[in-house]
Image 1 (cartoon, rainbow, N blue to C red):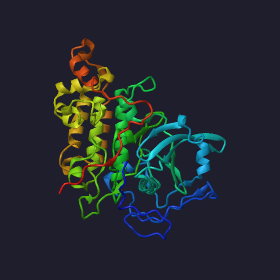
Image 2 (cartoon, one colour):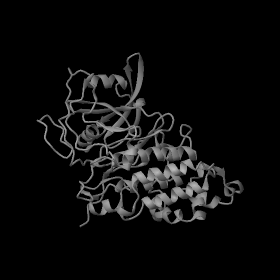
Image 3 (cartoon, one colour):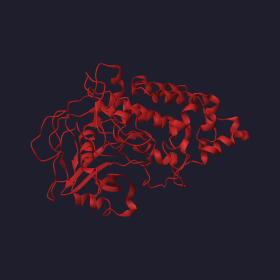
Image 4 (tube, rainbow, N blue to C red):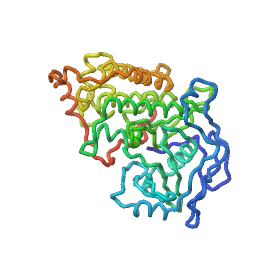
Length: 413
């Protein structure tokens, strides 16, 4: 993640001010604050779920709250929940800090949660913590990770989320070891549909929310592989009706950021669509969007693989070898074509997330059964598969190696 939140309200202890995302200040807790208190974030939101349009159908089960309903936790409470932030409770680590697994008493049961703790040396933490509270505190959808509450005591900034048992999509695609099992085709399609619905919901609001950092490590999975988008530190409100884009400091992750955004600082709603296209290619190939261990001409996955996506014969040679040939060829080809559409150079030529959801649901409803392709049965395409396998990047079960978001190259004028 990185620092950039020019359109959200400033979180401080001064009287609330009006901005594009109107909000009263977040309450700073003290040692005497009640852990069962409600959030101090309030005020009318200037974005709401779209109504009376086709896009509203993707808001099923989702809503944008006028007032956040977040629990305020004390630092001592979260310290106890994570066993004093013990190293063996660490789930992952990013630019913001470490994420710990914690356990909270919930009436008669104990509930597992994920606790993100700001690193005191982080250069990006406060504004992204603020963005998470302001956005996830008001957004509710089956395909968005639920923010349960936060803690702000002195210099301690923490966020508490629902716990996602299966971890990130990144770990399942690129991880190694007995704890990580390859994803079968039907599960990959289920994950893509869920993540697409989450993005479609964000884009369906009156003031569209641009996620800005869509990537495999930000797609989390519950115990049934139900996908939810996490980490709203870079989220930004989209342009007003009279404009096509917003101009902002270029932030994001190499390999996923849309080319027009990197080149100009112009952020479009469909800049998110480009990132989704990159994840589609990762799902097909089982390869990282950017891997410096690959030869120079292959470091950028999209640049390398794109010519293979429009050719059915070449496509068979780049499909993730972990599938062992067990995938429906027609569906794989349709996914490849969808990826190409998402990766169009001009934002206006990319499909909307609504259209992407529809396409993926049609592919799913076709119910094409996976089959073992003859090339794998006979070993005829070993050269192509070994070529890809050679450049798979290791990622240990704990995700310290996850691709971070940071300021991208300076905007060229």
